[in-house]
Image 1 (spheres, one colour):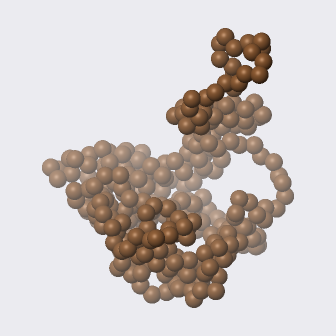
Image 2 (cartoon, helix red, strand yellow; image 1 turned 90 degrees about the vertical axis):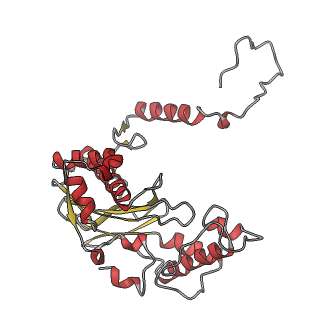
Image 3 (cartoon, one colour; image 1 turned 180 degrees about the vertical axis):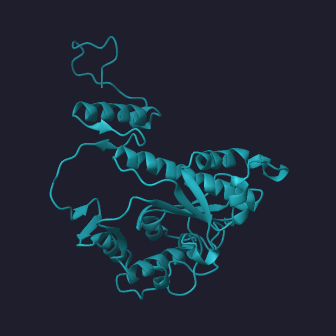
Length: 313
């Protein structure tokens, strides 16, 4: 901090009283980020263009085993990344270390609402696991997630030691899925060969008037994510094969994005379609239809019946 103008060393014993905390100022985070970026660059780090929060400086610290809660197990075929220690600590803290495991994280065909159920007198346990304003039904759903984790606390991601540099993506949506707002939910997976790089299941920002509109928003979202990953991989001097295959289970959505002529029913989603069509025209992506039964994103989009072990392959 710098003393204000007019403040001199003669004012011994006096201090500055802040009317508002520095950390409460809107520009505080931006100023701190600027200070940090300049300091890291002066130390020799190179700032990533696609992701300004990422800085590059390579130093071999030996075989990686544990980092920021991630456990890394090495094999000849590749590496496995999991969070077994964190999962067991979470179960122990919540009192579910000896609970009976289940093999699906949610109850099939059950959709939660913010107003459904009785509000909890003590929501401490729920807020340690999740956030927001819970009812007893939300707490039951949270407990089921913990029992699902109990069934496989060491479940993780496997990355092959050698594979081809080819991106492929799966995208899906649940139209009007939110019981409270009727907003649709977009979900996607992006793989580099057989390694899962990026995934998301998130409510769309606005309500879609039709399934076609929601589908175009979903395709636009995964197209942006694919483009960002390509930028990042290129900066790491990795150049995946083009085009990137995007698998979607709606033939009408694929037709709308590949069709160069807009119709009355699609003119209000023109911007989303233009975004996808631009990447199609440049050969960055290519759209393929996939049957709903083979849509991998359903695992994070819907409450599935039966044992999730059948989806591991």
